[in-house]
Amino acid sequence: MKTLKEIIIEAEEKKVAIGHFNISNLETLRGIFNAARTLELPVIIGTSEGERKFVGVKQVVALVRSLREEHDYPIFLNADHTYSFDGVKEAVDAGYDAVIFDGTKLPIKENTKIMKQCVEYAKSVNPDILVEGEIGYIGSSSKLLDEVPEGVSIAEETLTKPEELKHFVKDTGVDLVAPAVGNLHGMLKSGRNPALDIKRIEELREAGGVPMVLHGGSGITDEDFVKAIKAGISIVHINTEIRIAYKKALQIALQENSDEIAPYKYMKEVAHAVEDVVEKRLKLFNHQ
Image 1 (cartoon, rainbow, N blue to C red):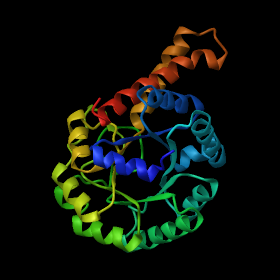
Image 2: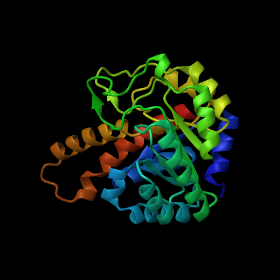
Image 3: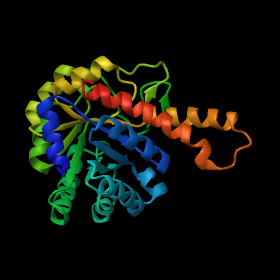
């Protein structure tokens, strides 16, 4: 089976993107995996610090590995938004395929220092693990929003700058980088997030020299997704959309099956709802 790094390189060459979807339970994982298998596309499963605490770090590694080994399938696990070296270390030691250190709230020098420490440790444990860094604050919560989060600015002058990204990659040795290009975590209740700066994406990809990741994918228009992938985005993160679909499907399932007490019966439709969202996104990211 190809490594995650090899699959990302292929995605860049084909001008497509790998879907990255977060989970916090088994039915979400099943929905994502079923969608990927239906389309025969690789997929990345993400767990934030909160999601890892709920599911269990070693437990989610075991779940994803079991699917990969049983089906000989390119499904990978990423430690999403980790805010400390110790958190990164825990995920690396547990056997994650990729890890992210999110130092976007820190001064750039501090972000760079800890990021470099994370890279060095991860590579000493597993040379094949991919380490992602972030530069440019886009918020930190996957939920429905009334307005752009406090501390997040989508003005052109506050987006990640090419020269800044170039030095960050060089000084840290990261494999992947997530910039601020007009994206934000969560979805605005208005139904449409701000437009992405496509030209900035092109400039950053050239300056950084490493594959780029688009965080905060929920709420971005289909048109912007297509343009961003063509401009240099190789991985797209989706979380809020899945959470919304999950909650709505669960509410309906409970209302329609008010006397049912066996979770595996009424949770089937919830997993299907997640599967539908993921399948649509994967098709878009791969021009299908």
